[in-house]
Length: 104
Image (cartoon, rainbow, N blue to C red; front, side):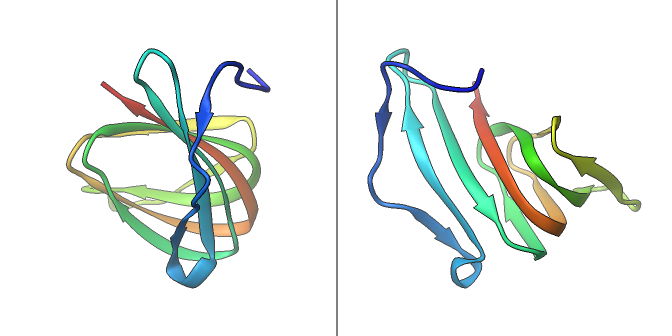
């Protein structure tokens, strides 16, 4: 899906890592939530509350989920899931555009 209709976008940005990662929250009429954002090259670790589906729209990064010892390459058009109450680390190789869906 390349666009979302009938949604509310929160005006204030979510800014992490001194501005290297920034996103905006999108709220849907059914109560679901997504964030749309951009990540600059660098290494970032995030913690989750809810389970998430991270779709990488453009760019390239290396991913390591909590409990994993290896890294896997993720590029534009690929996605991955993160368990609730977990963490993941990304080594962003190129500017990357993403859509994060919070799963119930």
